[in-house]
Length: 610
Ligand code: AMP
Image (tube, helix red, strand yellow):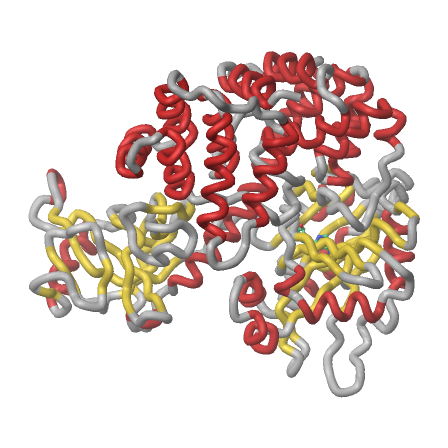
């Protein structure tokens, strides 16, 4: 297949916002593609060579791509960079500069899908000291043979900027239209949910039709989209919804993992299919050692744990295990246990379609000595604490025990014969019930005042807003995280200048990092309690600079003073940069979760409306 055919389809997709039209364009194109090529086409449309759970990435820096573009277009790096600053996308730069050059080029061979895949594979595999140079040359070689439109997409693919707008659901619609029927669409979706590999589903349906798709097995080689819980406001509502009887499990406050265990290795996937195995070497070893069978897929919650007094620690502790470096230290500093709650595969038997009571019973027999501390150490494996209830009094008692054991609440699970593991779906077979349903998304923050802005209008003559900072324990410095102007009453505002006078500074205090310029500076001293709607990446605030995004810090959105002055806290005891990063990541996980839910709701609405 010529690469130009694919580039033209990408271009057409970009020109429409209609999901229906995108599916039509894709379906017509898919019919013209060989099944083996279709797999690569699917990956390339999202700028990859592999399914998303595969951590390999092309990840070429924009500036490196610009060098390749400049060398092929015969212009200076500076010229390419100037255009990039205007356009913001190396793809557009490549298209424009190569269009100018092309009129003069005589010798070039048309790109094929195969030649592009091998060029991209070479970029991905380039290693060693001169890897950057090699990557640049591989890209330049392809650009030499590329049309301007092909150059646009080659550069977007290598720099991770493919955003065609055709999501998984649209591609599944197109696959159903091209190779099956509308009625087969749920089978395609299930195949995707149990493999997380759209390329595999596409190749299979193109080669063997829907019967082949139905035969795709649950496998240790592919992560499975996780099942999610609905929520209800009371235990009464839950029991009613569960026909009067259900299982209740402790809802642990940790990191969910899906473990794929074989004799040769163990992979732990997060709920977003990231590979977490390097972060939990102790858990992977215990799972492999204690599994009675040859292979299994199980799910559980990894929770930080204090082996000395046998207690669970809050979520923030286990997030120390999510870092990329210094894992050995984190493993010894933060002991972790996995509380297993589900079984999806055991020795070739797919349990996802079996009811929950059978899955749980089999899970409890699958591991040797889980939950029993071995001599001389604590056991890494345990099962979630559970009970069966048929009345609210018993349910409330179990809930209180869960809270007492430092859990977030309980998970109610249906015992019905239909209680299968619904991969990738949120439904009422699982219902969560938490203590903090009425609380805001994130905890409150203790921040110190480092600056003030003079008030206007009603607030003329007093400070109208404060510049607030959090503490970075690694650097011993304070970084700003919000401008606070809400939650003050008149009396507080009137007393504020007097309260702050002691800390007033001539210029920016040396221990403060700030980009925002207040009218008055203060040394860190006065600590106030603040709540916020959420945390966002901020170009102006400096706390946790670079931790989430290069060149940006983290800012609190819609901050509000709670009325509590934390006289009991020194500015060194403020909320730390690390905590803000953790809360940001937690919020991200929850947001993805709810976005996924909304997308799925929208999709099922669309399905019903069809
Ligand atoms: P939430 O993140 O609030 O939507 O709650 C769902 C999450 O609770 C799951 O993704 C798991 O990470 C976690 N969880 C904790 N304990 C359990 C349990 N016993 N069964 C299922 N999920 C659990």
